[in-house]
Amino acid sequence: MTTFVDRVELHIAAGNGGHGCASVHREKFKPLGGPDGGNGGRGGDVILTVDQSVTTLLDYHHSPHRKATNGKPGEGGNRAGKDGQDLILPVPDGTVVLDKAGNVLADLVGHGTSYVAAQGGRGGLGNAALASARRKAPGFALLGEPGDFGDIVLELKTVADVALVGYPSAGKSSLISVLSAAKPKIADYPFTTLVPNLGVVTAGSTVYTIADVPGLIPGASQGKGLGLEFLRHVERCSVLVHVLDTATLESERDPVSDLDVIEEELKQYGGLGDRPRIVVLNKIDVPDGKDLAEMVRPDLEARGYRVFEVSAVAHTGLRELTFALGELVGKARATRPKEEATRIVIRPKAVDDAGFTVTQEDDGLFRVRGEKPERWVRQTDFNNDEAVGYLADRLNRLGVEEQLMKAGARAGDGVAIGPEDNAVVFDWEPSMMSGAEMLGRRGEDHRFEEQRPAVQRRRDRDAERDESLREYGDFDPFE
Image 1 (cartoon, rainbow, N blue to C red):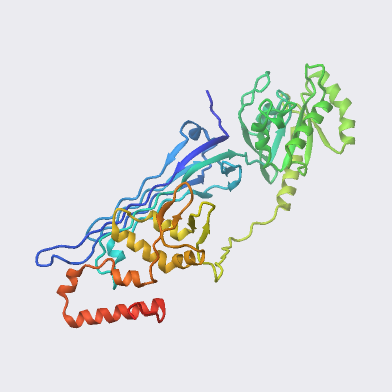
Image 2 (image 1 turned 180 degrees about the vertical axis):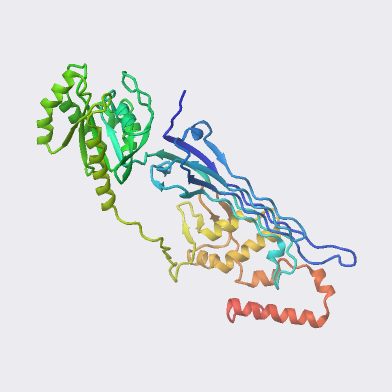
């Protein structure tokens, strides 16, 4: 039965935003009290958070589909919908988040580090929030936006200071069991270690972590044996320890050739050439092992390696090895760049950035792409003519109509807003700037006009005219 997983594909979906409410306040002797539809609630986010108590991605291997809750719709009486609950997914320290193409999205190191993997959709505005001087009683509300969804890949890279590398059954598990309080499975058959084991070692004032990970064989960098499942956990370590078996029963193997094979695999994997190395000749409690260790030690020291002869069984040579590793770990920590204070980088948009683009495709279709136009389309209820008119007004004010004219669009041409797989396509009918909005008077309820005194109606009309002139300059559609 699988008990450890260090790579999973996760299918995530954030919550959808709740729809806004279109409602009119009504009570005795006051049948038209004005719009009172509340806003919809925000959809819940999907958040990955580092939790020190989590050591594997096993839960997500068994349940790869995760979804946050949706926001609630708004209600009458200016009651806003409840926000969706965020979905917190605990992950081990050292988890890397990638997209399906292999691009790194986040590298989560340190307890409490979080990453919003999928953002919840915005709640739609109710008609109370959409009311204005020209739109006294909107008969529509905005829809909630759908939340983000997609597939991500989680990879676990063990966070440790020292990594023990070597052939299967070289004695790595035995070594970590006597250097620390870790209790890994120990046996005399290959690939006993199937999961990384972490131990904490104290050497004087230096405390560091040491990792015993699955053994290497020739071809591991191409995925043979446990292959990449091992090498992935070596990347974060500061020091590499070659554990060489001096008492192997395989006649074609010896410590020097084992070292060459492992170094070649590390070279093929890449990115580990700058890590300091130490060579440990293990199992010197065996008579033949002691003789072989003394024989190969000069060759290894001639290559520049620091060599330690140890016996995990007899507890020989462990103190010297422990302090040597502590010294190297201390040097590695001292050379790491100090963490800088968090800075917020503000990148303002260019002055001439319209926030959208208009392009003509080969089939003559004009496509509009941009954050605002696409969001507005998602929020529009196309079964409500007034909501569609409101969308047209927003697009017009943004300058979409002007850019379509400059791109050569004519009445009746097809216009698509959004990506190819999820676009709204319509036949374009140009309007005369704000004239369409003012002549159509979208969103007004003329029953309010009948109830207001004549003087107040004139004041409101003057206010509308002044607002229009401020928004569109000196243009007067009624001239």
